[in-house]
Image (cartoon, rainbow, N blue to C red):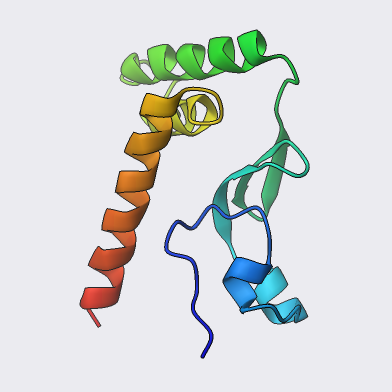
Length: 113
């Protein structure tokens, strides 16, 4: 029996494919941070993160601050969750919030259909 990970942000394919590496599941859309490559994964988009912890925290805080100003023309409210994803790489409280949200989202989507 193959069980998929409920977190949605696994950095390895074994959790998503049940130990089998087939190309269809390897291209499955995910979000989060791939800890093996140090990149932010948003579906099929891979964005490199700074190697320095201070730079990652600064980037996450800046994204959240700019997201709060999302009513302005260039910025958007989409920056707030992106900032929390970046902060969850280094800060335990943000990691717990992301994990709780991922579990809630998975339960919500699986119970509807």
